[in-house]
Image (tube, rainbow, N blue to C red; front, side):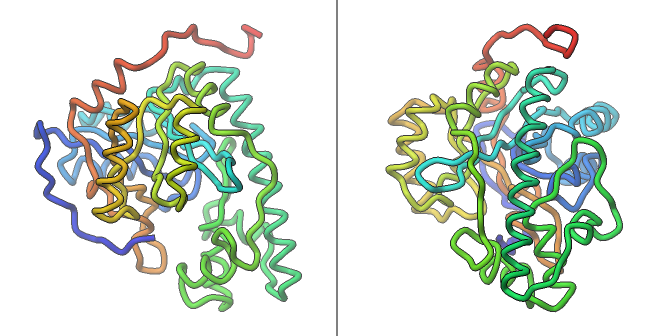
Length: 304
């Protein structure tokens, strides 16, 4: 999490600005897809990508609103994987949100996410922390819609609301972060599998926020195994030294360098990760990602 509230004034090779990492209420964000598009337009962005966790349920709403306000929209996703005993996230850009096989695969991932939620809640109960799945799914009065998912930020909200934690940071540090008292994760797909799924859905795989993994050797292993096209160099949880390190790795592997705020909205008065529009790329990066797409035929359930 990060409390940066000011949009940076980065000098880019072109003046068009794109934020390529954010989350809506379709996963663990606080804003609807439509609200994110409006916020991006208000902040002078030329375009944005919606990258919800393991779901594309918000993509259509965001795309329709982007067309209305004249914003360029990139359909995206962030897939949860596991490698080297670490949770690794793989971003996918320009995926086909109507690809039937992709949708089936994502439904399976959300099933794994549901298993994880149950295991975390069980661990919390063992620790004397009484929160229920219904409270988590309620999401402050906005129940789940089909294809949407809940995650640890929703649990953190409940922990704070019921007095088990002072704020979101405390909730994660004490209970929910990797290595914390209630953290648990079931078996997940590998980054290479996620990258293959993204490619097969017509998209471009990019390694998300490598600095969060705390293991640059693992980052290299993932890059080589998954054959990602890009790496997220600028992110709210990367310091200047980290950015420079990942630029060097990008150059070494000839990867596209991307950036994104990882905006989840405002919880308990705190911006979760970075402020929307604070970490951006120019139009050239978006065009490079678009050009890197693998051609694929659209699938539907009737095709299978």
